[in-house]
Image (cartoon, rainbow, N blue to C red; front, side):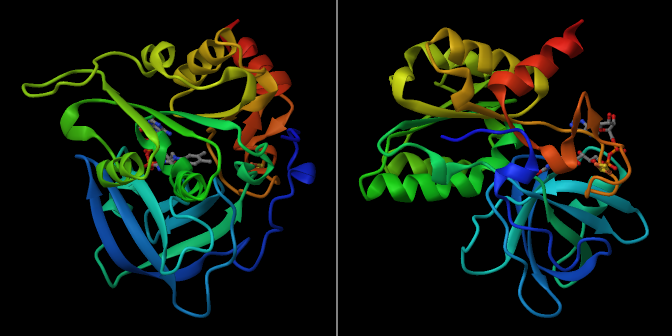
Length: 291
Ligand SMILES: Cc1cc2nc3c(=O)[nH]c(=O)nc-3n(C[C@H](O)[C@H](O)[C@H](O)COP(=O)(O)OP(=O)(O)OC[C@H]3O[C@@H](n4cnc5c(N)ncnc54)[C@H](O)[C@@H]3O)c2cc1C
Ligand code: FES
């Protein structure tokens, strides 16, 4: 897998229309995932949505409230509307989660680097370590990888950490991927009566996961501390740090590398991230933030 931190070399699609001012999109579908996450299906008022790559994000506007970064949770090229899955944590996410079908939101993007699934070596195992809503930016990539597995591609391992059994996000997708031959393991922070699965942090699933560390690509997405521990645990299992990707989160404003709000060390996360290699990039940034 060829790796580099910069968007310039990441081969992502160039910004298209709707880069600096939001385009109006109609909400054509809403689905509740767990207790506080809503997946919105969006279609542009005019024309077709711009092309995007796995793991890129859009800036979504709840008119009169504000604009925030949200990853695209559907797969590029999938038929139908594009999807975004939003956790209700504050003013803008709350407004987006409450937006009814038929209403309009603003969409600007797509922005950022992507999960370079097309560069994964043929036949290599793919390990996804996700925490909660961190599954959203990997959902489209997982759909494609599971499809490829069906036609002879490498094995797919999904390790997901969720808050509690009633807050398992994308439960239907996880089940479908499992049925389609992916190894899917879910652990929860807090169990509940009837929960037979593991309880504990997502990294506790790694020792029992039978992937080949010498021939694999790994992707981690979730809270920063989770990604830090996940990446270290993967390296301890023998995975080459340069074969691990993480997705960084910072406060975004312009989304196009102009305002500096998303600066993290030498990176502008909106432009050089959110997806960056662990080896040589995120490992240094994580260490810097620990000091
Ligand atoms: C590249 C990128 C992709 C993202 N993708 C998604 C996505 O797919 N789905 C999604 O739900 N969110 C995603 N986020 C996070 C999302 O942008 C924030 O949750 C949002 O900006 C919060 O705005 P707000 O006005 O609702 O809340 P605010 O009023 O800004 O914050 C409300 C409370 O939530 C806390 N908070 C803010 N941001 C976060 C966060 N990221 N995680 C945990 N707590 C937070 C604040 O500290 C505060 O306590 C992404 C962020 C980035 C940078
Ligand atoms: S959000 Fe403005 S530079 Fe990144």
